[in-house]
Figure 1 (cartoon, rainbow, N blue to C red):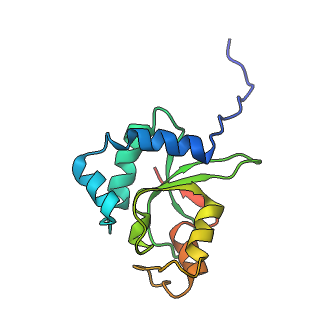
Figure 2: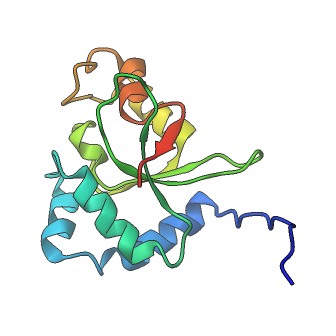
Figure 3: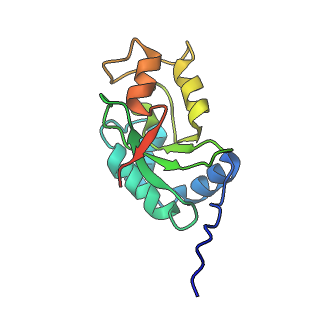
Length: 149
C-alpha cells in the first residue's frame, strides 16, 4: 500500500557535502581534475557539472541548475536544494571562469557565494557585468535557480 505522506528530504551541511565531493573528486577524468585545479575551465561548466554530478549523484540529491535571471550568463552549476529552514548548497566546479584566481570547486551556500562575489578583493571576469558584482552574481548564479536538467 502506498502512502500519501511526503518524507522530508535529507538535508546536508556544507561540511558533509564538501567531504563527499572531495572524496569523489579523484574519480573525475585526469584532464578535468587538472583544469579545475588550475582554473582553466572557461566554457566547460556544463561538461564539468555533468561529470561531477555523475560521480556524486548516488550520494547527494544534486541537481543541475542555472540562474533564473532574465539575462543570465547561461552558466551551469550543481545545486542541492534546501528546505524552508536550510539554504541551497551550490557546487560549482567552474566558478573560476568568473572569479579570477579562484582555484578548485566552490562548495557552499548561495549566501556564501554572494559574499565571495561581492568582496572588494574578488576580481570578476568573463561577464558583461564584471564591473557590477551584484549584477554579476545575479546573472551567473542568481538569488534563485531553475533546475535545468
